[in-house]
Image (cartoon, rainbow, N blue to C red; front, side, top):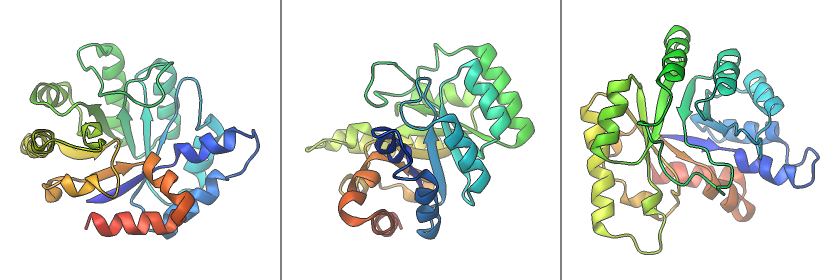
Length: 234
């Protein structure tokens, strides 16, 4: 498995003071030195953490491929078209949510906008992913709609006590997605403990971790946290 690190909450902390500390580009360089595989940012409609200028600066200076998480809106499609990230992951977005609460409802997205985005992605060799809840219906629909990749929501594992049923389900859906010839990513709520529940590792392309790594970095440093996580996913 490859490791993708979401640095949104570096920006959240910076925005609390409205200045430039902690610095996003410094975080990028720490990720590069720690041999992160992908850099993830979520440009939200309300710009609560990553800002437009951050995205431009990361595109300019990053040696890492950028994974842009975004809602399927005309504004974000236009931004993605100009930035040309290596990866795009469509995610649900609600104004009042603290963090992403669940997977994208593929039945409710605009087919017209998806068609436009798919055309951009196919012409510019951008890998398009859907962040979905792990079940066969969502996986089948993602495949039918033309997504190259699925990112399975692993939030069910972010509990003090996780049932064997939930662990079994996520592993079965990793296998099912892989058998559908989809690139399989996983993410949300993963940490040092629950990553051990993931079994079908050879079928997974990338694991995306954000809040936990940035939080743990307060105590361990960003580079040490990333390096420890990398050891756990080998």
